[in-house]
Amino acid sequence: MKIWGANNPKVFGIYNQPKSVDKIKKSDVVASRRDEFKISGQAKDFQVAMNALKKTPDIRQGKVQEVSQKVEKGQYSVNSEDIAEKMVQHLFGKRI
Image 1 (cartoon, rainbow, N blue to C red):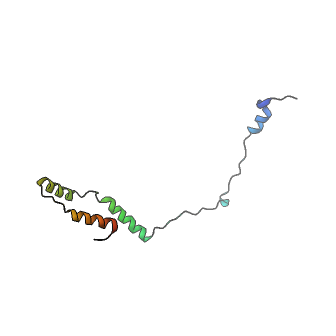
Image 2: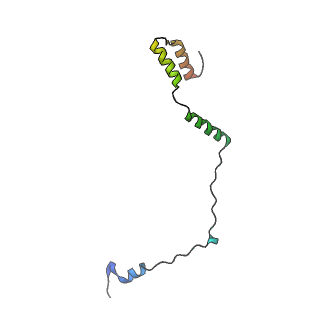
Image 3: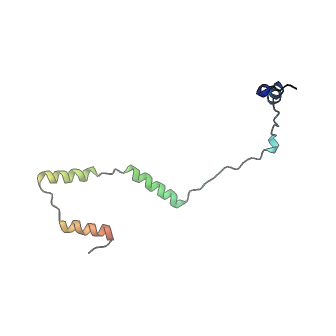
């Protein structure tokens, strides 16, 4: 009895044979359903609002120029009570 090891021709003969694969018939295939999604009216409104928000600039250039000119001319004054009141409104949502 001969032992050929890993190079045994009979072993290679078995593994090198083409394998037959059953073909799938079209009648056996079930058409899969497509995934669908629907967007609610509220979501559509939100999407429109977000698109409008993206188009608006973060900085109001007109306001920046106006305040800059007042600062340069020395005409810009700030009322500390107004600032404090607005800070409280922002933090607590109410007026003093």
